[in-house]
Image (spheres, rainbow, N blue to C red):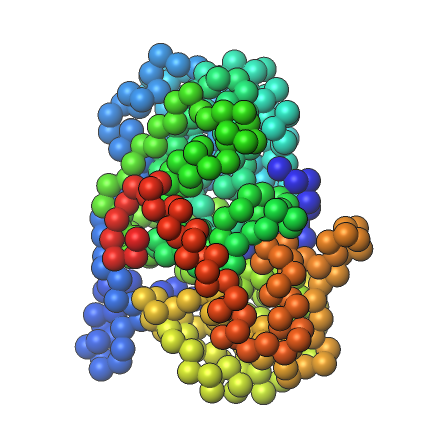
Length: 437
């Protein structure tokens, strides 16, 4: 994994809560449109499936667990605590990603290698670990089976999927089993956005997948195993097991699953954050505040130079599934800290038609058209690839088009063919079905 500092990148954050079925019913009773037409489902995670079976998939093996505070059961307890107390799983180590196993570290940080006070288990610092370091950690701990259980956010630039890929490569090197305890993609199962190009791979996009992959982590593991590991690791995993969820369909967003939500990172307070994040996460690559330092990061977007015209322009576009409210906010940290920013708040009005990539491109195009102060973030530490937006979007194309005055339709149309090719390529690895396959 790239050693890029994610403190400068992506920790994602919240958007106002989507209407769940009860709220939708209330809205209908009041004569207003429901915010979602997604069905409510009773979803059981892979972790819950295995817990009910006494962790039978892991018995008799030396197990290393990659997890964080999202790796819980419906009783809100960590899978590590549950396994340890059950005494049926031989846990030889826990491997903490960014923010740490217990989640005590902020963006760009980790908890270090330590002894967990609750269980007495060794927790290894795996944040930013490359393949060599991860392999060494697995060997040091004596891992025979690697377990991955982290809630993903559904965007290519959310780094936990690349922690998983690094661990998969290390598992090939150590001949370890790899077990994924599957969890829902909180955005549903539709793939969206541009493809990562090899020249712009980094810690926020290590391999060639589209910006919103539309897969569960279990499905991604199957894809990675077949499509990337043979070239990168010299072979596939000896044994890849995905402990499947029950009850999840590709047309179900997280708010409709019935599952508890735990923040995957400090600035991802609700599952609705993930719905906007694959698009508005790109504002990290501009001089606009993405709302970090407020209670609605990635929903609030603005800058001191923005006025009411932006919200008016966007509202006039008639974009499906979303509304734009003129908003003013003062970030407490990050860009424009302690300065009043004008801008917009993104309001999802219909989760079934909301497209975060369309929304982000429309907002970017309008900002570039309206404000001469709009700039792309420039990183002098990477002179060969200095524009952060290129790493987020996968190439120079989006930046070049918007800079040249392209319309949102032209920008989105440019990735249509590569998205269709990726969507076709991923089909054989999908586990869960539904209207959005």
